[in-house]
Length: 618
Image (cartoon, rainbow, N blue to C red; front, side):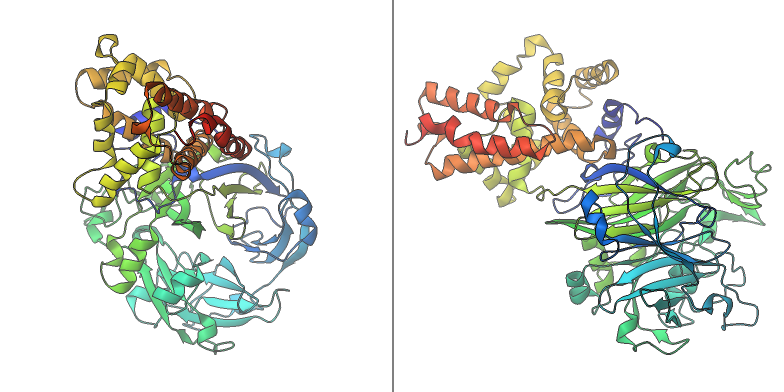
C-alpha cells in the first residue's frame, strides 16, 4: 500500500479542472449536489482471506446481512459469500472481522470460514448447453437477493473468442444447494444483451429506483470483455434483470426480460488501425469511453445511497500505457500479465462514479447508454497491498444498512491470498445552495455565517439569475470585511494560508503555496476561482476523506448556527457594531473545536445557544 501523494499537489491539478493525481479525479461532468463525492468514501482498512483453497480467488463476492450473528459485537455484522480459488469454481461463506489499516499482509486480521467451499452451481458450470464447444470458465458474480432469499451467480467464459451468446445467470439457496438456471439475461441474439456484456459482476439497485425506472428489476449485471470484442463493450456495462419475475424459478435456458442502462459501443479504430496494426493511443472521439484501453478491467460494482446523495460505483483496473497485442516481452515487458494478449502497462486501481440520474435518462431514452460517462474517476492505488502498478480492485459487496463497501483485491498476499478492503460511506446532506454558501463563508472568513447573509446568497442562487458558487465567492471580495482581512498590500500569501487552514486544517506545503502564488500573480486563476477549486478539489479527493469530514462537520455546525439566529430573531443588520463583532466572534468560536469526529460537531451545535445568548432579542 503506497503512501498517498501530497494532497496539496492533488488539489492543484484538480483546481484547473484537469486531473487530480494520487486520488485521481477526471472532471468529465459538472459536480451535482446529489452526487456522492470521492471524499465521502472513508477507508477503514482490510482483512485477509487465508488458506490454499481461497488463494487466487475472490473474483465474486456478496454481502449477506443475516450471516454471523456474533459479528455485531465487533461492529461488523453479516457475512460474505465469496468465490475461492478460480481454478476450482467453488463458493463459501466467511465472517467479517474488524479491518485494520496496515501495509503488512501478515498483520491483517483473517476471516473465519462459516460455510466451506462448495459448487454453488450444482454442476451447471460443467454443462454449457448453447453450443457443443461452449464452456464456462469461472463463477464471476454473486448477489444476495433479499426478496427471494437466494444467492444469484453468474457464469463466464472470459475468453470466448467464438462469441457464443451463452446463458450465464442462475441462483441457489442460502446453504448453496438447490441450484437453478442457467438463464440468458435479455433476448438471445440481441447485441445489447450479449453474454459478453452481462456475464460478470452482479449487485442490487435500490428498490425505489428500480420501481420507477426499471420495472422493478433490482438485480444489476455487467461485464467488460477486453477490447470490447465478440459482443462485448469498450467499457463497463449495466443491465437490469429480475429472474423472479420470469418464473420461480425460470425454466433452464429461459431468456429473461432485461433493460440496458450502460454500455460502450465497439469501435474498430478504438483498438485497431487495420491490417492487424493496433492503435497504441486512441485519440479523442475514437472511443466512447475516454482513455479506453483494450486491457482495462472492470470487475465489480455497488449502487450506493447515503441520505440525499447517491452514486453507482464501479471498481477495476485501468490500463494507463499504450495498447499492445502480443507477448508480455514483445509489449515492452509487462510484469503484470505474462500471457500473450492485450497489454498496456502500467495499471492502476480505479473507482468510477456514475450519476444515477444519468442512468435514469439512459433507461428513458433521453440519452444513449454509451453517452453516459463517470462524473469522477478515483485512483485507489494507494490502498492496494500488492504491486500498485499491477493490482487493481475486483468484485464488491455492499452493506446497504450501514453503507459499507467490501472490495476484493485478488492475489494481494505473498501466496496469492485475497484481501478484502473496507470503505464506509459518510453520512452527509446534499451540497445544496445553503451548504455551498456556508462553505464559502467558512473558507474565506473562517467563521460561521450570519443568517441574514446566508439567506440572501441562497436566495440569489435559488433564483437562477446567473449567480453561481464562483460568482458568490467573488462578491465576498467586494465586501469591506474581506478586503480588511486580505489587504492587497500583503499579497496573496495570507489568503492562501487562510484557505488551507479553513478548509483542510493545515498550512499549504511549499510547492502548493508557490503554485498558487504563481497562478494568482499571472491572473491565470482568480481568488474566487481558487476558493471553489480548493473546496471541490477536496471533495474530489478520496485521500482527503478525513480533511473533508472535518470540513463537513464545520459546515453542518455553521448551518445550525445560522438557523438558530433565525429562530431567535437575530438579524445582522439590526445589530450595532459591537453586536456584529460579537456575532462574528461567536461564529469563529463555534467552529474552533470541530474536527472530523462527529462528537465535536454535536458538542459545537449544543454550544450555540450559550454563544448567542447575549444577542437574543436584540
